[in-house]
Length: 212
Image (cartoon, rainbow, N blue to C red; front, side):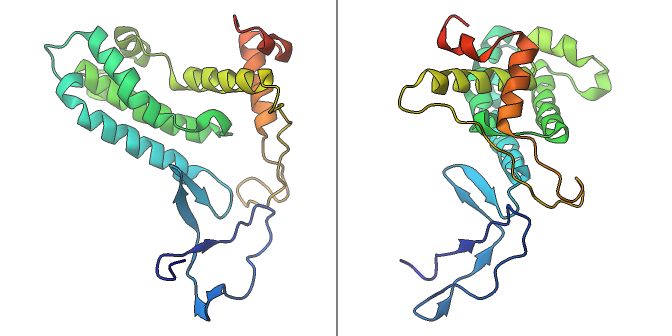
């Protein structure tokens, strides 16, 4: 274990104060951090996912820039741009979101970032005052909120059908957050899945049928 590269993170998901004392290796203190990257995700000390959202937006924007030779070329047909965008940019922006419990503000951040890229693909800016629905119809890209719902339900159906990995209810964690009110329960993934099913008119039992 490298002492110069090792860091540690104390998770405060329960709302308690950070643990006292230092973590050491051979009496050498190990730096304590509030966040770090792991397998493409950003783990935060307070259990939130704001850094994950920002990371996905940055990665999606970077992929978009790498593909600007196609996406910004006026000679390229919209159909080709649509396929390139859904193949290159969308997977980067939506990586790992199957288990995210997003707030409305976080969903709005993703929607704003995506609409900016889609407008540029069509050669428009907000100054052109063209409605988002019109832009989406041109590029044939569904709202990212709908695609996130589809991805969550696809993951839910896959796990639900698995014999070795039965779906377990995701319980909320009681944390202290001054912006949400002391002791308020966070929304659980279980609640999000039930809401998704309700929106599209499905039930959990239908997950056993791949046609849905």
